[in-house]
Length: 241
Image 1: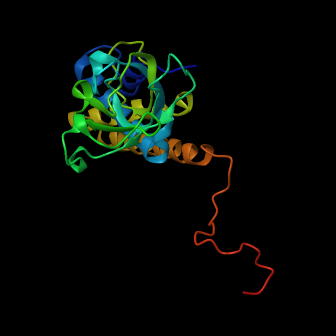
Image 2: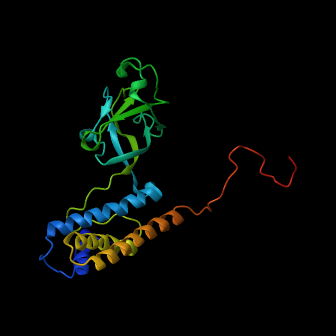
């Protein structure tokens, strides 16, 4: 079953032996659960950030070069993986082409009059973050295109807010308990009430976090981890040099 924000708060209070507010306010518990959750997210991204990769499509607009949240670009872009564009989606719906990244400082003339890029070899640039994030395309689209831009990106994991928000970590049923352990250990340490229990909870939570990371590293591929020939030599080692 999935693990949500409410579950983690309840689990944290169980470790604190405090079902309702007494020594720790609900705000304090919620804050530490979120900190613990983000530490698990960090480890997951360290092992395999594509765990958080999703795709989002949006429209291209005639004579519009830059696109933001108001134009359909998601506001939670952490890192771009791939962009595909189709400047002629009405007449040729399969003519998507990979767009390559450029640095706007490398464009010597005005970006709107850049002499490189074509419908077959489009380019993109970015600036801003979160709600101010912008994507610009070269060349500028010459016609409207519904869902003519495809964006694959690593999604930024925001804080948990409502009770039903799910903990988006690998193998949550197995490892989400570590979030509560880290939250409870931190609260006990801050309150200087149970240093021994605090240390135990933090160690257990950290162990679960590292186990999750290792499990993710081991399961992202069905290929063995091998040292490969990287200089193009003949791999037939039965023959002499």
